[in-house]
Figure: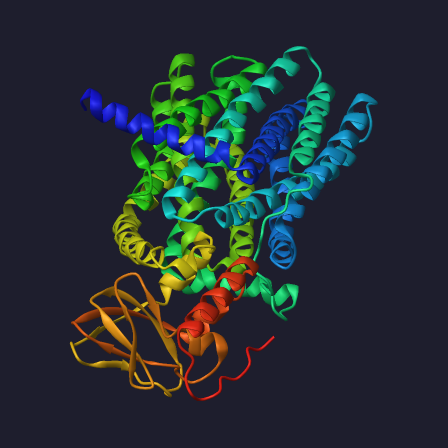
Length: 559
């Protein structure tokens, strides 16, 4: 790549970070996410060492399972609730709960209290932590207008996640070197409190009547149905399950590799985990320069494979420098998985169930982490550590090879969707809508070609949809008189849908036209479901009717 190519990629990378920094709501959400993830990584390392001191490697695996399974079962229900109420408020509540539980654990550990009480509070803390990501992931797209903006925001979030992967374990390692697990738990309490303070008072506009009349259980089932009925989401959930199983195994392997295989001692656990964070930072920078919004599914698959392959190499060539480099490579894979998964899921799932889909993702991930940790401990104890590294490390790469062509088809589908989004963004009435709303409209677009002289619709016809003009021009006729000429990027037919009246004018093609049809229910649901959009469309319709009102009296606009 020449110098100009590097400069262009560096400018693209800088654009991602500048956009997040300039938007106050995005900035607060990102900083809160940084604090929450830093606290979680530090908590995981300190708790793993505490469990190892209390009961060895088996205790580490058992505690991980006890944390993840109850949390995985509860998180989808909590996410269903989050889809019914304000997500911005849920972020603050989660960090507050984590702060309170960390304070309780600190007091118990410092006073030599019950190990069972520590583990119970750890389960509660983890349940709260697992809710943070789905709520955060569902909230962030509401602040974006294009897939590129969402990918950029997720790249920045991935970088912050990577920084937390480095800072959290490094902080834990420093505190553990001083011989104090209670100090580590206290640090988690402080960081969680700061995360809550950053998002306190945040307000993001969300669509009205998102949950409808469904019960929490009904809403939860609706989220699962979306995943089951969407082939692309099924593939992504399968691969994320493999990646998170490897992550669970890594929580055990990091202890065994540091303490038993490489003689790095307990602080080595934090050092290896911090190497993952360092690699993830490099991976996020790489993603900002080379990944962008294209080929995300393929990059996502590569990230899943990279999570497992280094474990196989480590089993073949174990050494401290090799281990640090391979754990850093796992971090690169983590960055690719994050930007691909969170961007694509936000584009594939309807906004009204987005938190539930992400909650189900955390459920699958939590169960897989628990299963991976137990499986890693069992395989390592019944065979050998090196054999366990190979067995668990091959799961992700093997599954990626199996579904590779499905990932490539998903990338092709997203390229076609991007064309539809660009057309929608040319229509001024859609300007207030965030990306999830535009994605919902784009998913319902249907092509229609009209010959020159053909009538698109007749005045007085029932309104069953509206049309976006992709190419060509048409004359608008009211009571047989010319009113206006419309062309590419303009919307016609919307008055009948918004006012619930027959067509107020005739639209006749003056040239051959390519149109995109939006059905009435989808259009009305989206544009009237957001307060700012509803105000814009009301003013838009009033302006059109000022230009021409049919002789027949229009019915009043419903309240």
